[in-house]
Image (cartoon, rainbow, N blue to C red; front, side, top):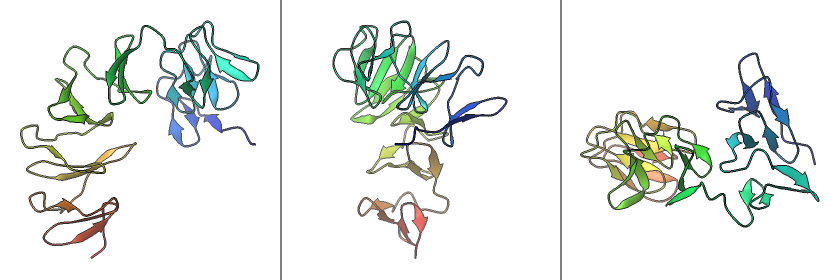
Length: 199
């Protein structure tokens, strides 16, 4: 099986087409099985392997492990770094940073970070609102509402949140917008498929 693809330019390191945020160009080293490291972190694919002990992380008997546990496909098999605090629903705190499913939420404010009431997928701090760890920019906090399958509305817009971004669905009416199923949505004027106008 071909090894996962890492590449670099003069400023950044990439896994396939995804930039590895904060990776150190000079010390970045590709290991195997999708793992890599630099002077600061251990990585699995494009994500920081949160809580991995840098000094003891190594490949032993064909499995990567540190002093706390073994890893398979970027996840711990057993055990946990005691410095990692589980906040629930995929959010964790480690070394004064907030992560969602192992991905660091850049700029999250630790002191004010909290769940949105009655919705464990959404969180907020004094700076931003987050959906699955993705920043939902400029959303109106007083009227925001999480529907299903990554759709969020406020009094002004409908947002479609993926693992990569939160985008405004231009022209969609937030007051009549509803989710039909995983792919299909509609408002009073149109029907949409995965957030794209179809009729």
